[in-house]
Image (cartoon, rainbow, N blue to C red):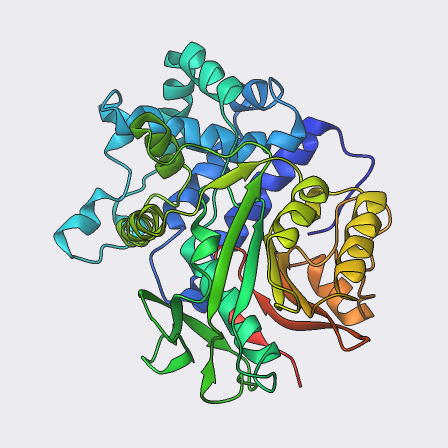
Amino acid sequence: MESNSEQTPLENQISMCELLATMLEDASHSDSQEGFFMAALMRAFASDSFAHRLFESQPVIKQPALLLAAAVKYIVDQGDSEDLGKYYPKYLLSGDVISPEQVLDDNFPVVVQAFLVKHEVKLRSLMEAHWYQCNPPQRVAQLAVGLAYVTQDWPDEPMAHIDVGSATGIGTLLGLVEFIDKDGATIVKARDPQTCVSTLLLGDKRPPADLVLPEIKERFALDLDPPDIHDEKMLAWLRACILPDVDSIKRWNKAIELTKEKGVRVQKGNAMDLIPVFEAKLPPGRPLVLTDTYVSLFMTEDQLVTFRELLAVIGKRRPVIWLSINAPMPPGPVGDHTTSGIVLDDSVIAREKKESFATLTATTWRNGIHTNEVLAFMHPVGFWIEWIAQ
């Protein structure tokens, strides 16, 4: 999406609503009902002056549009909104597929506004107390493709993993999640598969056949404000951040239970402080995989340079892989490169101005050689992946 440094914070969030709605309506890629309700909610927010007032109550860094959507869903889940609640896609519980057109109607924006007015105090309180934290399991599967691809010719040896900005810790399931395309073909195999995620492969290119994930021996995670996934009230909030459809919630619930079972605790702190602490615990020479999904995007350019320099220093002691899923370019007036520092060609920049999508980049330091490559474009929520690596 095209950044505009002259936009006011409110204009930024209205534009965000419209872009998110377009992205979520992209059913031609997903062949799914997922996202349509959320798209309608975003369009209602974009045209509602009362929603705009709630946007302005929070700093842009907290993503007020998505934060408000989560706060609305949280209240609906408590059973305190029959009028708005009837629009949420509970119909999928029956197993029937009903198109959004059969559920949403012209009165929907009016009902949304009435809800916002009625619950203003509660909405403001929730938005003040929480952040929007959403890390769908589909992203772990997309990272798995990148890891298996990068390491396909590496020695078969255990690796360590650090998930940066992990939030719930779902990202620590890397290595345990298999990737299956919509036709049922396995794209990436795990040595000890615990679950699988399917998505649509777009374009003519495909990842190499028979990719297998390496063994992950040590798992670490960090976040500036990690939520307690053992607290039921916090889980209710985090669940409200997931796309409001049955399939997405089922995938997320399964991933949360598996994360609890594996017991990896997300440490509170920043990447520059904790990565060296984690790395010091590893055996000499152990390859290290670092992942982030929509985290490095929020670093300043100076912070990104420092982050990359830290990984380069570690890369002199052991092989390092940094896999990153983020918008193609960080927000701001200078937008021509990924968070990993890859300068994008004009066709990608032009596409980014018309379409909301993410990039999967792989940066490695190994045997004195540094590589940096865009492996794929993908839907930000995980509906599809378009492989572009050679």
